[in-house]
Image (tube, rainbow, N blue to C red; front, side, top):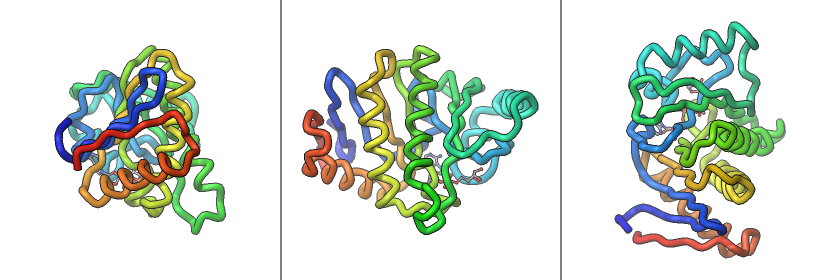
Length: 200
Ligand code: AR6
């Protein structure tokens, strides 16, 4: 396995990969966008996805918001991937960090779960996630990593179609934090059936 990639094996036959990269280049069936409720684009990963995918994504976002209003925090909707390799973009809205007193963990967990359930509904096999809420929305990465990994491991084990979830993390620090969180989850015994391979 290439250096710096961590693989979490989730029986039966599911994999969570942690790697460093630019999610707009991911070759998964869908990539997840850390959007805001307007779905009109923004900075960070949201801006990068709209720039790389082109105007077809925004056009669909407009239609969705026109029909159902702004997307609430923790919900997910899918659009085309436009010019991306990924055929679909799943847009979800993470919570803004508020000191942990406003159900941020539950809302963040729900973003990952809802995104995976939507991918399952679309019959997809693989989905790539960024680290939702840990940029402009200020969620501490150490806390978010545990919530994100637990939600994905738990949900993936319940799905049929989706068998691969990738965390495409933009910088080495975030990858290090997620890798450490995965090791801690393994040794906590909370998910007794998971295993970890890594080369770093
Ligand atoms: N590939 C992978 N990860 C990336 C990329 C990329 N190309 N670009 C940035 N990241 P953020 P949030 C990482 O701020 O905290 C937007 O304006 C970044 O380093 O994009 O959920 C939206 O419109 C960080 O680790 O998302 C919302 O208003 C992670 O993606 C708001 O920001 C998330 O950072 C959402 O804030």
